[in-house]
Length: 315
Image (cartoon, rainbow, N blue to C red):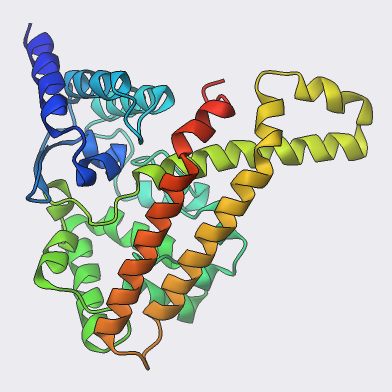
């Protein structure tokens, strides 16, 4: 009865906040774990237990019924599966001391259910495998040790918890003072403070971006598999296209590839500008904000949800 009541309240809650720009752009990993408060860029976090299931069910049923731009059935199933996994494995049966090391070896985050280092970044040397969100300490260590800064961040945060997060947060602020990365206003500093991600939302959320890269990965795998069959097993190429949604995925590859190139160019520009110590920090921050707005515009214009449905991502 409590679960049914919470699911109903979650449905009503989704009706009230639906359409809010910040809410719609949020990644499911963030949205599922909080009750968002419109206008304040913050929310009330929830425990990672059975409470999440009725909340997710009520909220996402409403979002599916209204055809929300960053919501579809595969995401609904993924949210439920992730919530169940976190509920069953909390506390985790894997000792925390070894968990980050195993994640780094496997290049897989058990928290996000995604690769730590994206396929695009894996094409670079380890020391260059970083994003605009990678800590300054990890960047410096990665450059000197030729280790992926993303994996350094994951190991520090996973092994030392809040203390490790505080060290990384401090390194970022010193990096901003030294002009090694864009400076941040007090609210941005509060957003990135360890633990505050459960309360405060990010200005540039990754909901559509996460949807795109999963669809792009499936399309790329199908396309490369098809080319391999054409080259080495030509008689199996056409039957492969007739299986499931392979034809749609192969046909969509060029479109996905072009979008991926555009997003990759934006990420490279953000990284280049973020490391340009000759530029005024405030100017750098402004340009980076504009680039992230442009990234969001590309994803919205491409109608990522429609692309995912076209390649039948759920098959």
